[in-house]
Length: 420
View 1 (tube, rainbow, N blue to C red):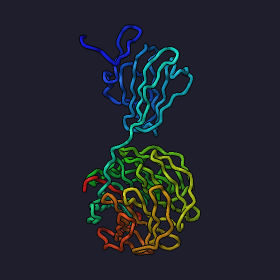
View 2: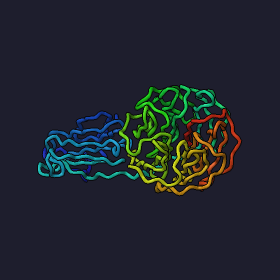
View 3: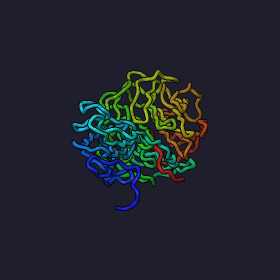
View 4: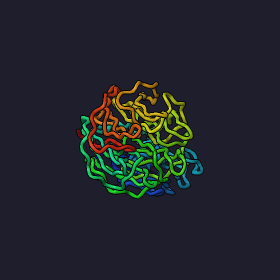
């Protein structure tokens, strides 16, 4: 070797330690629940499905270096645990627990000596600067029109609903849907019998065949996107009212039941809000109708009940609008209503706004066009509808738009596609 070496540490053995730029990066992301790492390497740690315990080398020399990167920004959901394997870590022996649990975090550690052991050069979370474009198009699907349906109707970026598309998957009603992955959607659960199966929708609006269900089979849940690219199903009726949830990762894989938080109920609505991926479940019915809400963090953690604002009701719908706000609308209070409640970008629900359009229940709502929303379909008494009501980017609901497609109730809707 010739030339000048700078900014490198000399190990006690006389071998020059690699700089960060000179590390060997292990090409395959780590997905296992345990991994033993080696000095001089960088690792991509993917905790989408599980926590990961990372065992450091049992012997090390001054200047040994290891870098760990949160590959899919999931350490906030599934943390990493550092096992220092007999050596000290920041001056503490390996009986101490060392965990990192922040999305987007990276960990750059260097071995000092037997006293201090491994010391982080940095352990910062990278700012999540890239913002995925909002969904532009939407899809209504499934529902009931005298019999269970699996028809779908696509919505373009101007809010125009298209004619029926021949159905895919098990016909059912009283299901829920949400966007995931930034430009795709998922329909899940429902009633015919009790279902937990799902159907993915690609970025072109094509509905896929049934995926075997995960979690408690139920009808009347709600679903929403959260965290920028993930989704959550929550609540519903599965032989009794439940408050459990099922998280959906950014690949559309549904997780097992998460113990419920908040009042068990069916037929609530759910929607995303804010600029950092929060969401909210609201309203529904248990032994009586409620107006309470439950906020969802950007990591998919559901909070306890928040005292309700607005008229208690069930069988309503909700959608995002304006980039960071949301709207609950319509529903059943003992009779069908068309009232709405706006949700601020901090998750605060506003008082009732007098309804616009035909009062109805068991409808669906979705965002479209990047910053607008629409409510569609539903039933009032024995009259079924395919009408829609557009919502502008200020949250103002428009009068009825003549329906397209088969009239039906107990339908679901979600946004898809980042292309207009």
